[in-house]
Image (cartoon, rainbow, N blue to C red):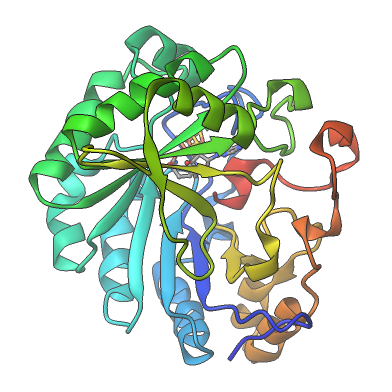
Length: 326
Ligand code: SAM
Ligand code: SF4
């Protein structure tokens, strides 16, 4: 069992398959001509399986594949099928562009719940955020997933003046379709021009939601990061992920592996442990993984705390989100 010095059991691993993406989301990527990692630096399919197997032996029960865009990786299907053999809940976060061709393998791998990012219901605004004209493709693929019976969570990063005016439209969508929208507070990462002014906070999101709908607060699952709400008579629900204004670190169970095989014990951790090089050198990676968990800070990677309005983003040492794996 992987327990940190605060007694938190870590049983959820997020693996980034690549730092490459076919989108250029303004809150995630530094700029258009970002340099991606050389292929030889990435964990290969067999290495991902070997590392994941060690984590499973140490108690990991859930694995999420992410990136960059995990489904742009050519051997994504091979990796999904390799990991599907393990006794874990396997899932994926994707921008949805490649879902149509991936559905058969997702089903074969027993994946039932999928997170899709969609920050706008408006074609023009979608383009302004992602810099790619692919709204219809993502929308149609979400409809396809719903038709195929998948549990669909929609990740929406809310930014002030960018898409906060669409909150009620997203909730309206949950009236007629069983989609579960998760409004995420904008977080600071390397190169994403974060300022506290752009954060549309949990309280503000809730106030907008209350202006249009009546809803019930749902019971939180253990280790839940999202505060969930069920509007009356809606097929779907919405939730708020309040990393900035009300962090939920005290019951965190998450660990991350970047596409180049570095372990991070927190999304905001400064430090990384090079698991892939150790594996390639024939070393036992178990003590490294244990130490990384032991070293986890109490909250937010030990990089900031308290009032998010006082954060100086320039002082935070981290990679860009696309480079970490969300
Ligand atoms: N490409 C896939 C996608 O977009 O779903 C997976 C990787 S993406 C980095 C994972 C999640 O991180 C997405 O839901 C995205 O919206 C979220 N994300 C990226 N940058 C963020 C930021 N600065 N603040 C909050 N969420 C962010
Ligand atoms: Fe790509 Fe996802 Fe980042 Fe958008 S949020 S640039 S889709 S990795």
